[in-house]
Length: 461
Image (cartoon, rainbow, N blue to C red; front, side, top):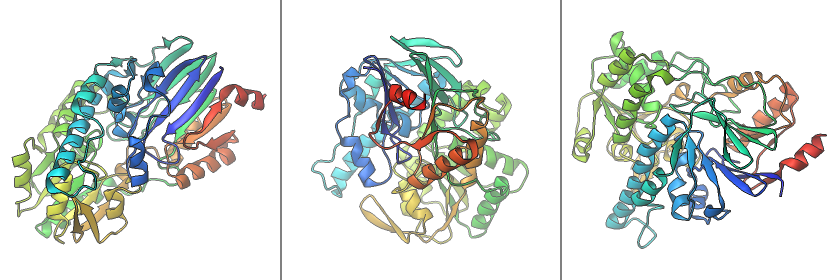
């Protein structure tokens, strides 16, 4: 039977991360993410899983973002019954995010059916809140830097990866070989999160490549953000920020708090219109030892924004006529309350749409960033007349140079490095740099590719 590695998602794209490691008949799935972005990718979520879920012995999550965890309810619905291992913070975040994901899918299916803009009759959610609850019961918190056998012949070790609260690299040891999954690597100088842990070596490495073909801008983020808020306020407009609920929303509040504290922006109201982001922010206070902010700073960040919980409160924001900042989910404008704000605010040139991170191809965020004159929301074509600003320096992903610096911590090259979790150009650019600058054996993983690690070792020998 031997040892095999299959790329079931997160290969050729930045979404749907799923990597299956098989050893002597035992199977561990690392990450179980949703495909997002282009319709052709989203349709993969509805395909039958490549292996019957009941044959998977365990799942390990690198972190809680939906492109790494969001398919879990469907996997459990279809028969998976094993443990799901992750750091304690990731488990807590997953409780918030998977419930929210299921609720949104049910609400959007109901809304589509009620408004009649769906091509499916009736529209159905990918999974339900009941499916999410069944998945959450299988979560098992796993401590960092603890090595333990999770299935026969496979031991697990988690290392901090930065990126977001609870994010980890996953190291699985099988047959004496260490297979390391980078997950999403954070940045060394992130204002909130600690730097990814330096790793001295692994036999097989899977490294992400979201920003594998670029460097983050060197511009001062606070200055750019202040300029955006100030010029929008001078127009008596509103800044609407599509934001990820985990990490990005908290970073934005921290930066806005600093700008207000330093009197670099007016004392205008700031709204966090995401119940999920509100709950996540409380976790940053609970797990204060896992990021750079003190308890006092966490408290101050929480006080800078008005937390919007109810739908009625959210609707009232769209009636405002005075300057404000609205932070709302989701980060790539694929769903959530931000869609209603975009419908109301995007047609007005006084307002600003601030895109605060990577926009995957095929998402509304990517269309807006590319200069689209209109985008389709809830079956309507909405004109984009508001100013559009992309603030890429807020990304929680390491850029190409930072990834190479992290790889430089290896004392010995891996037997082979697979580049994953990146658009084709980004992944291939990183592959070339790893090959040329480090001299490693490296390739870009392909969707549904299955590799024999035994054969790979024989080839190298």
